[in-house]
Length: 118
Image (cartoon, rainbow, N blue to C red; front, side):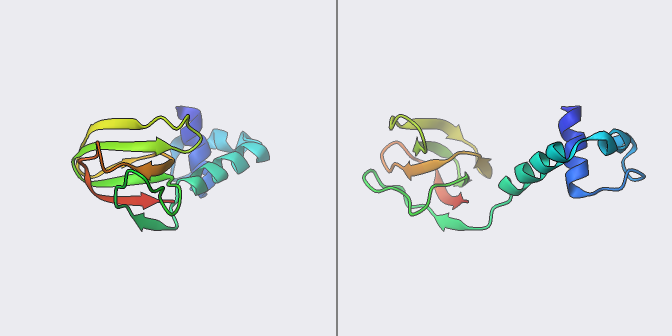
């Protein structure tokens, strides 16, 4: 965990004077910093889609995450999965699930106000 925190600090360019444990970051190699930067970039979303659950139609774009505005179950097909749906039970209001989904099913989904992020 600490190594990840150090790489994160290095990737965002926080001065070591501001973060007492940042000194070891200077010893990280270029490839480690590059990996950390790519990881951070993957966590930043540039686009979104409003999700209307549908049992027979895939999303217009596979998600990187889904924001759940109203609590409930969420049944999805995952990108790269076997095609078997996965149901996330009782997802709380305000949750962002970091999932690559290609379809959100109407049957089996009670969660509302869904936003696909990618």
